Image (cartoon, rainbow, N blue to C red; front, side, top):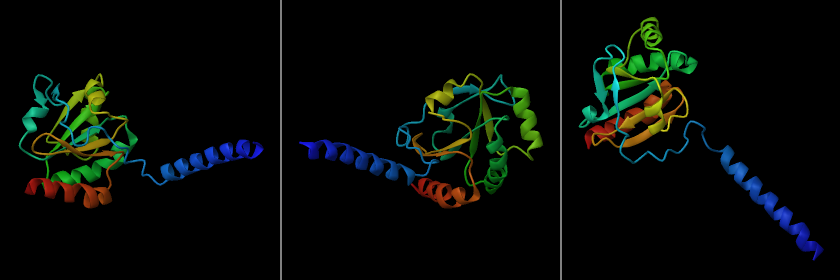
Length: 178
């Protein structure tokens, strides 16, 4: 009987160690999203440069596109910005920005100071409701959305040249070929 009391806590401890070891092997930028493989949430948001005009996700149907969530107050967004500028210059994929929980004037100034605007257009999600629909954990986050409006990939954190070259571009080429 004493042996059983010793084995139960030991077995529980070993199981816990196994779960922790498995968790440490995962990349924190690859948090599984329940939205991958599902239709992108619909939105109809005002455009950053002209709030009288709106953009909806439905307008992007029929093309592969990136949806990049950013903010002027976001330090990693500043580091990611040159990568987005380079990707936009390649004209491989349209990039739609969603300015998240930010002030419009600060966002416009930030784009001017950052060396340019990589976005086909940016929309404003000042209250963060669309961000909630997309499961935004924090900024920056980037989604690859296919021609049918299905989210095919979600990247949490800043994009790097390596992520673009190894993950995004191959997926975009594959989706454009379909």
